[in-house]
Image (cartoon, rainbow, N blue to C red; front, side, top):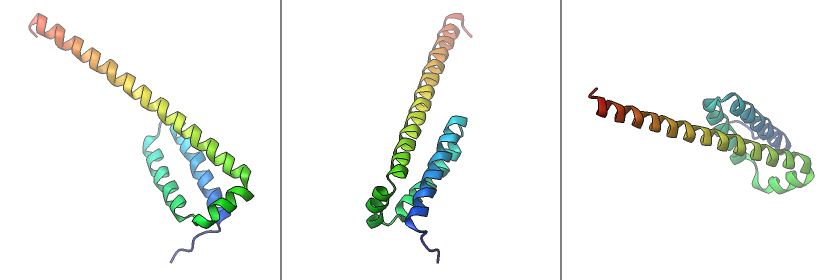
Length: 107
């Protein structure tokens, strides 16, 4: 049976995984983001709820760091989704233009 690490160590691991998520997002490695997000969710689920407030209060600097990391991750993912939407829209427009040309020119 795996023992749950001390809450402070668990908190530090969550921060480390969050930092790795940011680096993966900057590289555009969305498979790694997905895998790391699963890992982070498992770590968060293992975090003793009673310890969360105590750790966050005792280690406010780490709590602020985690919040800042979450905001960075959210921003990076939002920008990537916006870029993907723009690329999809451009592709659809180009495809429509090609279809219209082919219809008019019998190809």
